[in-house]
Length: 233
Image (cartoon, rainbow, N blue to C red; front, side, top):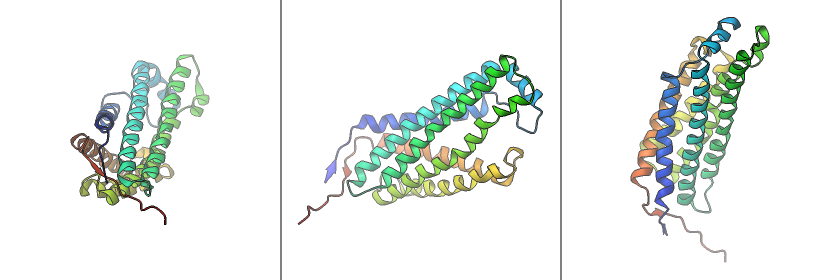
């Protein structure tokens, strides 16, 4: 049985996927960031005062990135759901991973809280309570990303909704992100080995999102073969 999906859903996912990559690249390359924890709290607070507007704009862009990823992941899961049919379940794994990414907005809120606290005159060691949580949350968000890619990769392997290279790239990047997330226990801030693994995982994620977005746009509206389930006798 073939099902012709709404092409708007696939194209929306494609646009949001590309937008997510552009927004994240802007965060990494254009927006200011707070100094790493190996700097003193006074230096970190001074940077927050100096770069107040840029940090607040960066938090907003980070929230936009999370929103774009949520829509992209939901559209991928919807496409996978149609292809798997009622007997499939990998779409649910990818959807659960996507939903967990909403925690990323908490990190953006924590950045805003820290910058606002500095602006309102909070000084000294009390600032350590609010500093850095957004960074470590950004590291640990690699795990729900890995869950999303695991579901998308294994689902695509079963249904063929993505080219074979994208299928295996999803599974490989899921493994790399899982290992890279463990950098919270090591010297990730100072560029430790696991931190480099995490960076490689995100680079692979960029490639996969762009590749998946292009595929979804080009194949939007194409009939999808839906497995039929024989009625119970």
